Image 1 (tube, rainbow, N blue to C red):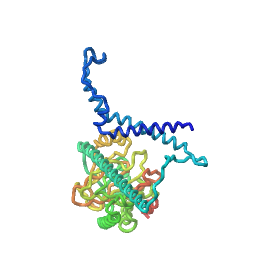
Image 2: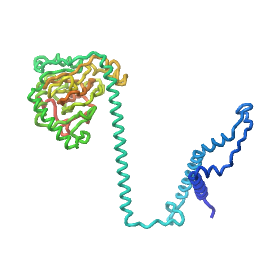
Image 3: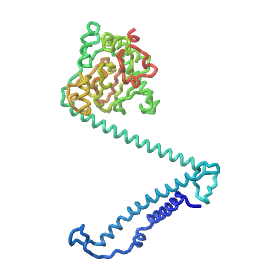
Image 4: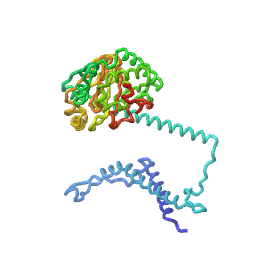
Length: 424
């Protein structure tokens, strides 16, 4: 029978591959002995080297010898490729008695008999491979996280450098009781600055009761999750984790009582700011910043859009001083021009960060209310005390909240509670 092209390729490829393998594996001294010894001879070089130039043929021989491993590899790779191609072609041409393609099996090949320990050995190999894969993936993820944290730290450092040169002050507040007599002024200020401070939104007793509940719930959830907030659905996503937690609060108890008290006191303002009683509760949680927590980068909670979509209130559950990592706000940065300047400067400089900023130094029960588009960040906690902020957010009635599906609230509450429900 006349050999097929695949037979020819296979034979040629196998011979070449075997020769290449033998050549690469041979000691250097054996390969060198197969060459003709170079004679030390000086001749006139070709015209390309210039008139009268000479070539040292010992140097040429040494150069060829130095390149021999690479040359061997260059010969080895195409040979293997040729053999594999031929093997594939031969496999495709092999058919059984029914005409179906089968895998090519070399003549004389007999599979070894299966022994009792083969199954256990294969399971062991699979286990080892799985462990190696898991360890490799874990190391890769840890490396990526470390790089991300390093990049975030560099970003914060650049922001701080710019903001230190800007004017700084404290968020000035007004009594929440004043809203009953005149909420128009407060709403106008909120429209212009995207920020409003209201003192005594909840009583100190209510704040203390919720603080205890938050600490107890945090300890329980961390124990349940093995000490990692990332492993539990009881926590939301927050910048600069580690010593900072975004804890979703349970409905009922001190959390619900504090929410109803704050909303009732702020109702005249919230009615206008959140678009009426149909505004839906979209966040109900506590931000916990333990000693050693790092400063967050300046950021908005919602990227710019023309209309306000979310209103958020931070309520201090204990006095917050400058060393506890108070919140930094840039009043007026909820506008299109501020967001554009912030983005164009790579979020590390520009007019937005150079604008005057304010720090929220609060007493227990005080609250800062802000437009979710406003640029802000949590400071680093350099004290020895835990800082806890109770916070809640409302989606503005009739507006789309782009973060509705990931807002920090328990699933059983998402989209179920309105401003009207809490004011009833």
